[in-house]
Image (cartoon, rainbow, N blue to C red):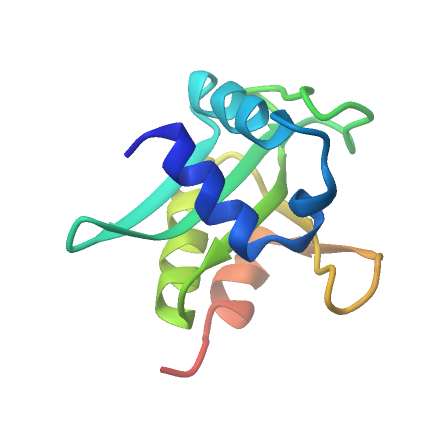
Length: 131
C-alpha cells in the first residue's frame, strides 16, 4: 500500500485533514510510516483502516514528538470503513505499544476535548463494539 493511497483514504474520512496545507497530510503519513507509527488494515487488497499513534512520555507539544519508551499512546487519527475495522486497528495499536498504559485521543465529532483512558479500560470497555 502506498503512502499516497493511505493519504487519500485518510483525507476522505478525516475531516480536519481536508483543510491542511497542500502536501501536509502526505508528509505526515510518510513521516509516521518512516518511524513505524502508522498502522493500516487491508481486506481483500482494499485499504479499510488507517491510524497514526505515537508513544509519548507527556502530552506532545509538537506533531513530530514521540518517545519509544513513553507510557502514553497519543492517537493522532484513526479512520476505518466499519466498526470491526476500527476495533481491529485499536487492538493493533495497543498490541504494538504494550508499555503504554494510557491512551489519549480527540473525537472531533463530539467536541474538542482530549479523551484520556487507561489502556486496560480501552481493551475491556471501549473496544466492546457491537457487530
